[in-house]
Length: 166
Image 1 (cartoon, one colour):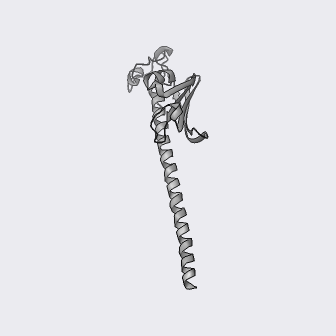
Image 2 (tube, one colour):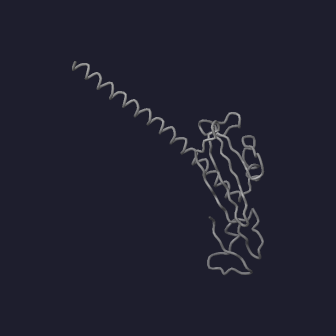
Image 3 (cartoon, rainbow, N blue to C red):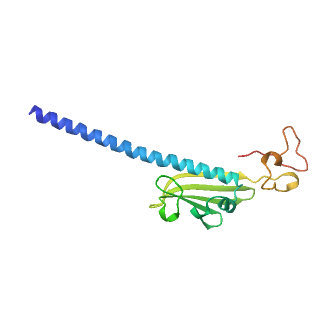
């Protein structure tokens, strides 16, 4: 009788340990997916700022064959199970960048989703102020930020606005 009780207790403890390890594995997999999604979305946000919100220019500069622009203001990137960029047919995950301009603000929503069930893994919102320089003229795209704004201690003149990077 004692032996049966000992085997029963051992079986229950073993079942609990197997459940703990299974949940730890699932949590580890989900954490890895989330970390890769955060990295990809953060990189996309840096591209958004680097290309000053111009998704068509961004698409021309990166690997065009692995992205598709479904409509103006929207760009999609596709990733495989290891978060390496791939084509839409082989993709497990899809990251979209959607821009919207409201007056002097350019907004971008970046979302990483699992392609099979459209489950949202991570979302990031970016906003960029499209600042004006001297005389209300926009700064040229190829002009560095430090040349577009007056230096430290300079007084704004001719209605120039001083601002910083968001």
